Length: 199
Image (tube, rainbow, N blue to C red; front, side, top):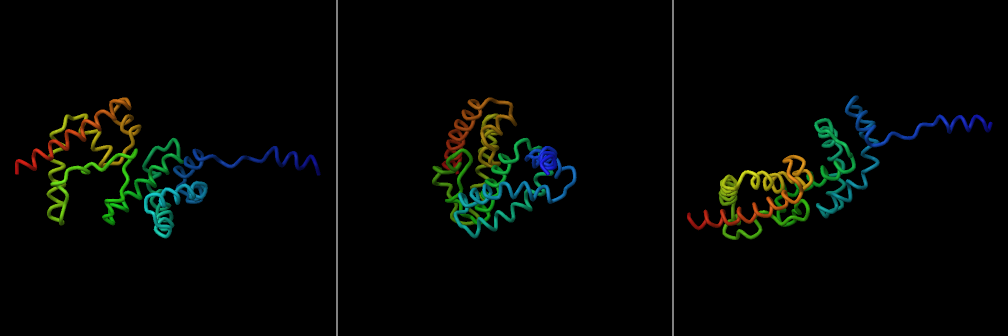
């Protein structure tokens, strides 16, 4: 019996890692591979949902909805680190849910960034029409920023990209990205207030 057990354990294959499961899912589109991936990290997904949504039942629902969301998104992206990618995807999904529910006062931004419009008091919307005017003013003001500042601000605040993601997308180092975002936000505030005063 002993040689049999030795042979059994010698030939036993370790479970596939995340990267292998991602590869298998992309090749076959079989949900069992995605299911195993998601099961491994379902606790992470739930905890991230709970952090942003702050409601156990909503977080459970979001965790289930994210499985379907991830099943499509994973086929559209090159993913080198599934756990990290899933964390970012979950966070962005929760932010979209919060926006959809208009809980703007609870929306945290990437890297603990403050809301883009935090101190532009005259432009806070009071109704749908005012909200639309504010959005138009924001897009007009963005066009007045220097190109690199505008690109980094849009990626950071509007597309919820992290500093590292922006650095990879733009080719700028992290210190430059942070500088462009900080200066861009300051300049954007000045432009918005100037344009508002000129109305």
